[in-house]
Amino acid sequence: MKRDHWRKVNERLDADRDFVEIYRNLSVMEFQWDMLQALSFALFRTYAVPGIGALLDETRAFGDETQKRYDDTVLLLEPPSLLGFDHPEARAAIRRINQMHRSYDIPDHEMRYVLSTFVVVPKRWMDDYAKRPLSSQELRASVNYYRELGTHMGIRNIPETYEGFADLMDSYEAEHFGYDAGGRRVADATLALMLTFYPRPLRRLVELFSRALMDEPLLEAFGYARPPSWFVRLSRAGLALRGRFAGLLPARRRQRTALDHPRIRSYPDGYRIEELGTFPGGGCPMPHAQRQTG
Figure 1 (cartoon, rainbow, N blue to C red):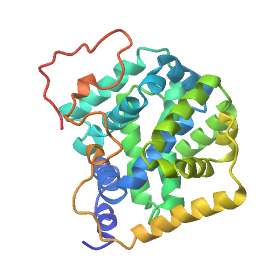
Figure 2: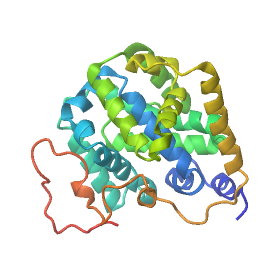
Figure 3: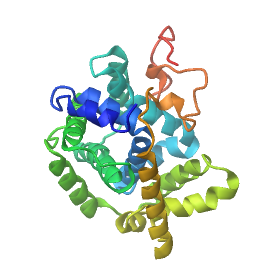
Figure 4: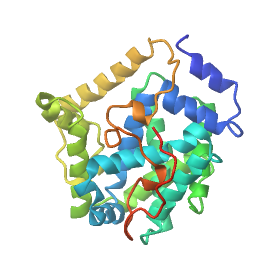
């Protein structure tokens, strides 16, 4: 198919009515790799908020089972975009997310901030590193998609526009970013997991590259040293070059979902949505006669 196939498909859709389809085309057809990187980086930013990083550290999920926590997060966020919010599997995934969140005293402003990162960080990633930026139509669909997700999660006062999400994220980080030992441990564990995705001889370089993509407030919040300026420029230019090369390739014909990605490694024999995530009050409360996925 032509390189601009999915952009043209999205142009023919309505961002206020077909936002799930548009977002699906972005996340599993045209920008699968970029979306996975951007959303992973979005979640990583949230650890720099002490209230969020400390809670994640206390749960020990990222310290003891970092790979599983990473996989569960990706797999629980995916069903609404693949199937729509009314599908039973999507409802089960959102219910599982809500069950985990309600086990802790998480303030609404933290939930709203995390939601904002899912909108803002991918848009900025596409601007800087993807083969093309999101169109206004696609950006509006992304806003509508995450507004719908936030509504299903019971989050209040959700911004209505991208500008509103961007203002929320930037102002929240300016006020709340700060060093916390627990948040640093969660960040370290996440980076350590990311390094296992690469051959051992490359891991030191990948770790340095990862820090080169972090902005100054994020580095300061985690207490990470900033790489040399020349390495930062080279790293970001190389990633942008990768995006331009991707723009020369033909459009993808087949969806590439989370389970198609080699980084998702916890469930080689499939999984049940109801059993993903953590269960602070004990084991899985669901009967084991559920349909197996994968």
